[in-house]
Image 1 (spheres, rainbow, N blue to C red):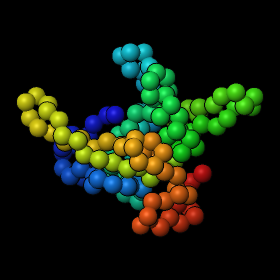
Image 2: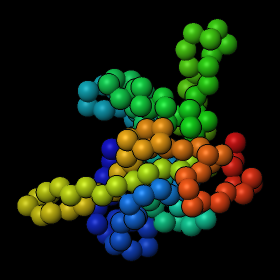
Image 3: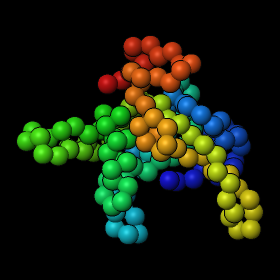
Length: 149
């Protein structure tokens, strides 16, 4: 998971609150880890604003690929192939503009001798931290035209 450092969120220094957020994918890029595993790096912003909620890496290969596939299915970025033997993964650009609910948490860590906090997507909630717009968490009211796929 990529980290958002204090002062690197939207218009101010505050991290997104812990809990569920209705987000849209603003940026999506394909990258490769130092181990040679492919992944999509997503920037997630709050629907209706430019406030960055979190970054998330969706692993396509390696140990995290199963969790990555679950996230891609929620975003509409994966579908069964014609032979029904596996999954076709859409290119990262097709994820831009898709929406979901993500569950974020704060985690403290030390960086250059300073205590910092990051904001990351929790894989223990929903479907690997994601929920489809058609299945909002309690307390969210989503209009049909808020669901872009």
